[in-house]
Image (cartoon, rainbow, N blue to C red; front, side, top):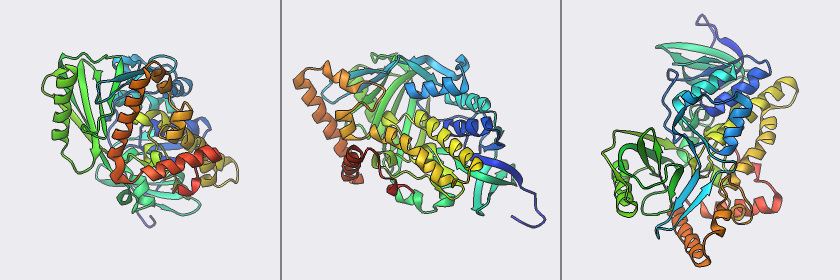
Length: 409
């Protein structure tokens, strides 16, 4: 990046991505007085495939850090009361969120609102292209309107979700070493839908897919399915729609729109997070954070804030930024990975919807049946060979009180 070309823009921190993790990191840095630029490859406000269902913890974070949520950033219904699990036997378990209903965010506008509230300078239509960590700073190349834009940042934070652009620049082989899932949803006009529109509905049904859900949005019904990359989305989705009509009496019109993304689903289950190298930090979903029921916004917000705080700490003290970040992020690793830990689920209360409390209302025989159906569903993940890893990480967590950082990149 030397010679007679364009001069780089010098900043304290450069953040790639404009989602919740990026906004939270930017807020920490900007509030501390450090010049921060955010790169977003699309024009804001940009569409973001997402259910929009936020956890109570994520809701609290937004209120405490960004202020009251304007109605313009919400879908209809504007809130979600909790989660309802469905099983092949037609048993179901409803769980209300702790503290009451949470917002149903319209990500296109909610992300832009949070970024505005952060106070950071946003460069949209600017795509990250590469970086070089020089030790004292990071030189970043980006593309905008067919030209090259250069930046020189003391710290870079990759908060670009499953695109993993920053991760690929630091660890080129990483994306080829993890399993990828296809996660897609279609939007249907409603003819008749007995499903309670106050809840996010999830099916523990191995024949439907690794992740199957439905909920109401803006007068339509979303039907979604997730599976290991390689299968046909349309055929899997059609199977779910037929099942919902046959078993739940859900009658829907032909889909009017659809969203399909690939997701790096898995690191949070087996404690294989990726946090970066040198002056480059990775956070949010790019780092592997994913809550159960695939709500990623709350852990993105919290991990992003931690990344921003670690950068601030490294500016103010001689502490190495990676050491600061990995020390701080351990609390978010515990909170996120606990949601997938069999021992924490059985002996603790890692979620923000009371599964154990809901199960207490179920008769003993039905309870055994539900547990058996959950185990049958978990076998769907056997080809990924996660079982032993999850079990061992769960035991380590119970014995030592934390998850070993030796597994992190």
